[in-house]
Length: 192
Image 1 (cartoon, rainbow, N blue to C red):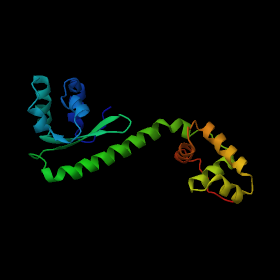
Image 2: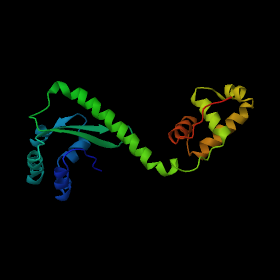
Image 3: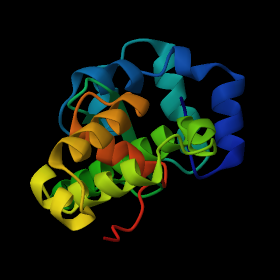
Image 4: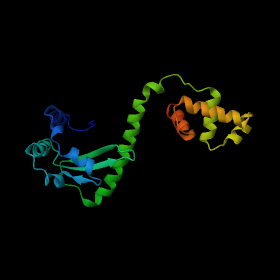
């Protein structure tokens, strides 16, 4: 998936010519764990089609780029590419740019996941008001006994409500159920 902001003409040429098939950045992103520049990568590119990609990019004002690979704990790989028409990136800027790119990629991944969940988020809330209420109190750190006292029900009933909510949300843990309910906007304000 290519998510880009910048020169539409360059992006159209990149996609139109199928340069992604020869782009040396793509395999490098999967193996690199630290940021690197196009200049550093160009030194190891022997394929003339890969070298052409850099030449074309320069024609569109992208003389240099800092590439920040982002590897998630779940094995997902993405990268942020910060292109410039300047000669390069000072070494002292790399740690900050690396951190910023990781945060941006993490937020972007979260937004993409929310977009994937949109049909479910728009659906009718399957939780009963009491299940949502119990989850809301649990989200505030209350245990079953405390929730039972607040709602004037038994702690076994609280446990039952939370387990029913967990099953409806296809969550394997109570914490995951709380997160899923919150993410979909189904969490209610805990009122006693």
